[in-house]
Image (tube, rainbow, N blue to C red; front, side, top):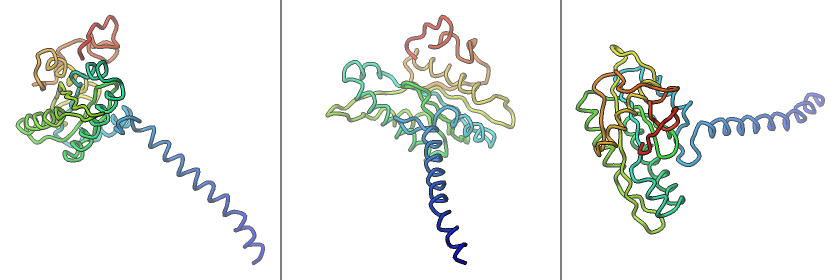
Length: 217
């Protein structure tokens, strides 16, 4: 009996050490799945969750690009810009929770989301409400910063449509760019046919493509 107790007492610190290591590892893995500034999902985590959501039924994919964000950075500094991004992340997180959706920060001042929709009217109402939320002033260092957003959207029905998350994001990106160019708060695609060619998986002319010249989006 004494030998058993001795063995158990020796094993306890080792077990506790492994348990602590497992907790820390899980925390690191979870942290790697989230953007450190906004707390939103990273691309890989979002892609997995979005794909599952799209397979369940009618959904919409959104690409959101902030307006006048560069002006905030240039006028008030990067700390104010970070405040805008954090607040935008919080607003999108609340919106996602209320709409059973998921959100990602794609990079810079660009975000994307997927959420269920029930009809075209529901999509238009959602776009209006999302725009209103993102147009609310952000308060930072005594300033009320007004930063709106250009939003592109595309609806998807797994019963009749065939497209993956990447293709739907490109379609939503096209509509976002149309909205930004036209001064509209949002645009939604009427079908799943791309309007522009793609280069390396991105819309031709987009930042990051060969000879890309787009500056606004």
